[in-house]
Length: 513
Image 1 (spheres, helix red, strand yellow):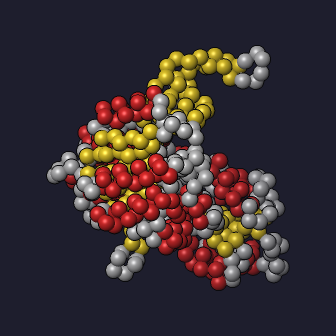
Image 2 (cartoon, helix red, strand yellow; image 1 turned 90 degrees about the horizontal axis):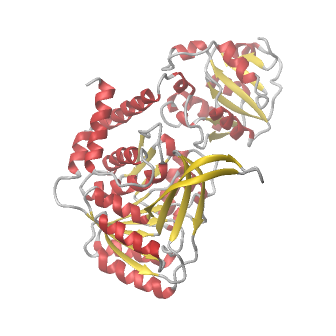
Image 3 (tube, helix red, strand yellow; image 1 turned 90 degrees about the vertical axis):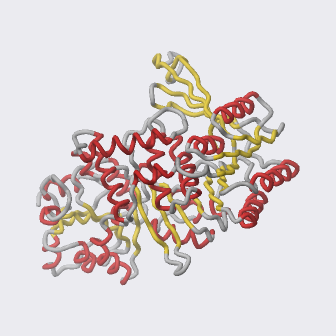
């Protein structure tokens, strides 16, 4: 070895002296090409211990894996050892991770998310051995957006096709035919949905970069164009209408031109709006400054105080009135004051009274909010970050988080959104209380604007389940709809024809049709 940092597992096995690092985090992987994801992964490990030891998969192990090409183990080890954050690198030349764990008995084992899903079997014994000695398992929290092997891909569309093949493989394992799912959106009677939540106007200002200001280190841009889109819960109702639902929308807005614009655009989208005016707050507006397809920054104009008791009672009356003809209710809460605790309680009561499904999405990554206020819902859809915030838990695996969240909220089903890594569906078996799990990858590797991803997915899921689809089937549709939605600037509705086009185009590319 060319550096004192690098050791062989075979040397450790034969060594008579005790390993000199007694308090450290143990990491594991092949580290084929060092990229920012690896650095974030190692920084996560550093949060738990000052010292880091990396267990490196050997060439012999990679030869048995799905990794297409790799650098020799010595070169990979040198690259990792060159990182100041790493204290030791151990090449697993004569065994596996479990063999090293039994020797070192680490206090903390830090693993990437792939070892929770596709590669869980490879580390099961190692995890068990760590827990036997009282050690802790930490999974990367989702910030690693790609694997080293992906960097070998010649073109981005090849990655998308690989994701598509993985997606279809997951469906086939469940006996699901995607073409059949998309066609069922347009068959039979339309579903009736009531959507309630915070109204937002999304404004995009297209700019041309001029240069730097001579007065201060500030970028100067020239405004070229501006466009307004309905957002928040309002766009969820528009997405549902575009997918064929009879969509009714209930919200509180300001008394301003923005509220009038929202009403007009909702009607144009085929939504029946019921807007209650509040003179104490403006309609929430988010202004995004863009250069080409890149966001420079965002300005928010809003008031976040809860609605008055008087408005709350008006809202409750409309909920009972509109829910009588609904097949499901969607709550899209941005924590801007419309969805109060009293409103949540009433919604649960209304759903039970009418025997309809209640779906909740609380978008609080940048606001103060907690998804655990959605108790006894049919489905809740937090991001991983929102789920961890709700439980004040940043360390445990996503599986543990999901199970704990379902137990705490008493929800029947759960979708955890993973951003670029897709989503995971959790569905409870009523007979045995066994929780079923299904991961779907994101179907877009080059999104133009991710603003509408979650909204379009939620609408598709709601329409799907009211059309008789299972939650897994509806979530698969949601993945496809969001893949279309993120390919244009602005939160724009997706229609069934676009969904069918996506499916056919991806299939033809994936299988050479």
